[in-house]
Image (cartoon, rainbow, N blue to C red; front, side, top):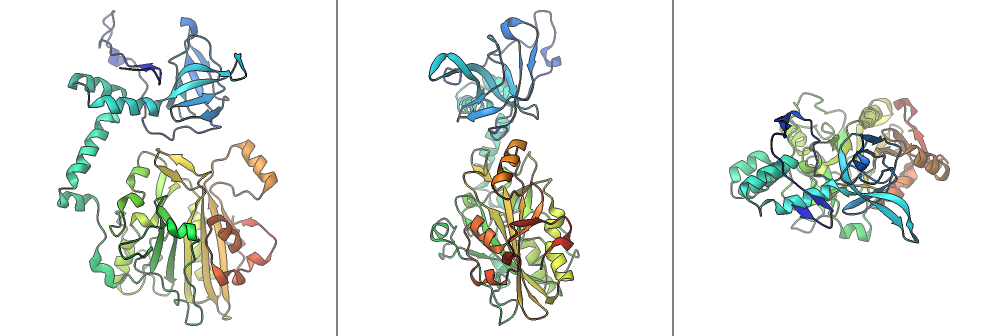
Length: 457
């Protein structure tokens, strides 16, 4: 199998060498078909045998300087005769197959970089040819990309599942209309008749890109919380939840961890399990599981189940420092002068379509998340605090450069910021709430919350 554009050929060989050695005993390199293994400014290494000589290894400090759909350019040094050498990322996954130098467009005698064919592009070509060849050849191709057969089977299984409602219901617990009697959603008057806290407003463009149900509404109501989805990103613009610290069930309801699609909106408008498998991304609750779990037992149990829809989920790195992030509401409820132990919380990702990393071709991963907490103090005054947490993976050079230009939110840390800065990041409009943000009256851009006691209320 050969493709001239991608400059590669697959050749099958006998299972034993000319000296009768079993080739199964020789280690081999697994090729991973998914995209997302490399990005610009990452480092790569190449193991090569130039001119048929002994093994040469060009290690790490060699950056990827440009990425195309099918090729990557890097500064890693090679010699003539190294075509076909594997190009590795820092996790020693093969991201490309080296095949050429890149000439200077102004002087063809100068070489400004090297070029490799992306493994994901080779995999896509092989997959397109898979069903055109005989069974024996298919088995050989499966030896190159081991998940090839599984991906074909999964596709067939999904097509079969559409006609098998029992199996489909078992693997994807759908939205249950019977529970709608409890799904009144976020209550803007939850903090009292004198403190109406409406949902944040979307801009006209954001409204156009919001996912709508058949009735035309873009507000998905669940038990004690609501979600507004962004159609083009498959994630929530924001979630809004009412928390009653007096009536919470705490940990008395066991965690089931069964995630589902909400069938009120198209499945294609919701990031599903395909984003979270075989990687370090967790299904991060936007509305915490126990936040809406209060009230009568039956209502609380339904609230718990409602937090496990993919609409309430976003990809968060497993190392994301959630200790501080997750304890924010608890701390405010228990340590601030909160009237009646009630707060309303808004949460969501910061969408930056130009900076958010493309992942597995069809998805983008948010770099940052925000949270806004609203409460009524015992003195009767409304109080608002805002927070941002980042999972950016900056290089040292980029950190230093950005630190000179603007405040930098370091990865896996939690910062208190002004509500106005959250509005600028997200495009959301919180209206009159800006007046009650005490932090916003200071000149500080943001402060690190290393201890919860650092919070300015």
